[in-house]
Image (cartoon, rainbow, N blue to C red; front, side, top):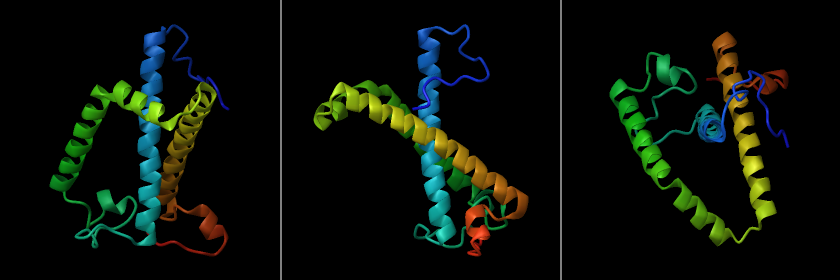
Length: 153
């Protein structure tokens, strides 16, 4: 629905290979942002993985007195990096298998790819908003505050 959007002119002199690289980066960041928004909401609700009950929600998980230990963060980033390397090396094959099994026509595939791209864009703006509001006054969920339902982070 939003189509091609390049307000900074990054694609003015780019070839198709460069456009593809930027688009893949946008999709990857969008997927990460979707997970980040979901994680922010779930931890603000109070849910934690076993053994992480004492880790605070929001930015406190990284910068607070009870933050995630550096070793654990390093392990998480290493694990995610390995997953990304593995996925990237077989991305075309995995996507082809998925699309063949889905039995979607070309129009449906194009629509779903556009939806994924736009949802990723929305999630990038969403996590940016949550983090920004949390940094300003510790209240990331502005709409909840307006409705009188405070969410403590």
